[in-house]
Amino acid sequence: MINVRKQILYWETGADEEMLNAKIMIENHRFLAGLFFCHLCLEKILKAHVVKVTEEHPPRTHILASLADIGRIKFDELQEQIIYEIQTYQLEGRYPENYPSEPDPITAQEYFEQTIILHKWLKAML
Image 1 (cartoon, rainbow, N blue to C red):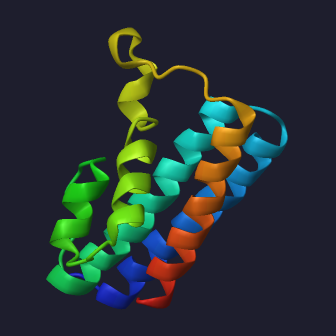
Image 2: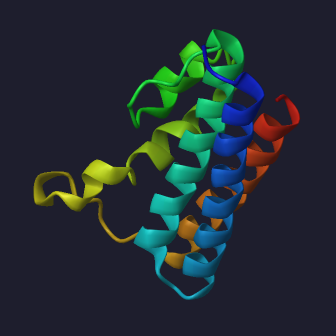
């Protein structure tokens, strides 16, 4: 049996760190890297929710919608759209056939700001 509180804190702290990494990357015009860290932030905070609900280690997946389902998170339409868009920048994006195109600065900033909102909302529900 796992220490649920310790695991939630682990994933929550990791999400906070990735949010900071995303901020640094976006501020330095490293948009692909910044959005990768946005994805990682959301992945980790969703894994905290999975632990909370299942009282088990989260699955080794990077698919945000799947983690949200397991964690019983209900997104509104805008949140679902952001999750879908941010998913583009996940780890598999480093492979040539899945490499996302460089986002323009305005789009990157919008995704970053939406990630901040989602992160705070998800964190508040832990």
